[in-house]
Image (cartoon, rainbow, N blue to C red; front, side):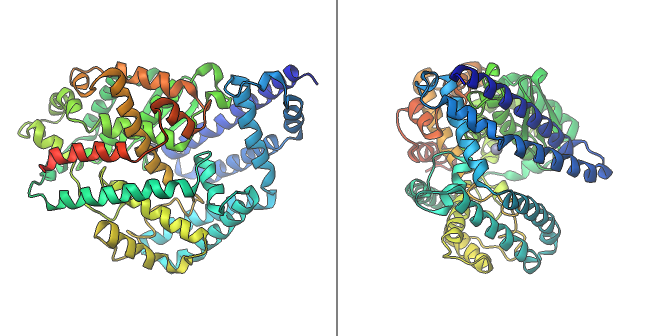
Length: 502
Ligand code: ZN
């Protein structure tokens, strides 16, 4: 078969698979927002049927034949041409899919689904002993999966590579060590400061409908296309893309806490802006897909924190917030801005501020690595967890529920995933610095309601590239150097020394 013909067939086949997979995304969105309680059993069967179909397609031997016909062809000579990018990623996905025996895939799907249910039941009861066998099974299967996928240095890398292609534990270690040292020093200075924000103002009454209206006003002002997406309430906020023109956001509103609804929306909007900025003509191919979870998270954290928690942003929007919530009329802009940036070591990652957040992630990473190196037994996780929390954050959980059992990730088999959260923060600060070098200081523009220049910069440099480059290569291309902890530490030190006065 001629390479051109092989490519055309491959492209058609993979696009068709992408359409089918996007029906799964639509069903997943529905399951987490709208589905009636009695619809879950049927939905599970729909997902199972779709998963079987997709697995068949992803391991279809014709993919191997088409890829073979493209080997060494001029069509894929230039590694950054659209065709070459797609063939590179399709080959990678095909080889990975073939390496996982069907028995393991089925067992993993079962074990993680059972472990998630067990976690949901065990967590409120603080029943670590009841949950542990489920976790052990998932861990054993994930180790088996890592062996099946293959790696150069250590098993953990095989899992990391699923979420952040090309990233290795060896590379993360120095990056995270630098971060840990810098964050610990900053946290010490913050805790030593006599200045303290009044966070009680964030716990006044904020009616749900007002929050929703304000959230949508913000989405429009920041450049999110609401005609190509939606914002709906849910229990655990997420962003999900159905296709070009259909990028959906969810958030949750607490009437007695300002941050959850608004910053949750800005976070998911960052993910959504990335998806809305991907090249639609390449939809359904790697060239039109987000490059990694780390880069994805960089976009959400940028809009949530670097933009959304900046003083300039609230110079523009605080009067609007006060119009929606007259409860805030007696609170100054400065006091509000300090409150939404309060730093407080805590037990729960998802509630953590910008300074302590990455310390939570560093702990997860170290524990995961120890588990995969067989240096730590799952039974000993709670002890190791407590020790690290005391050392990194000066707090330790009294129970399992707010400790080792707080996140659903491990039950769902998401091991090697946590590091992408911190990589997101690292990339975000590094990208932002570069954008300011190109566009000048951005905050003054934010204060004038000007967000388009920054969004355009992100579109041109990051979104439109899809998966053309590997994440690390993208960071190097955009910023001129490999991922570095320096920019995040600089940003945090600058911001929090001003707020806390040192
Ligand atoms: Zn996110």
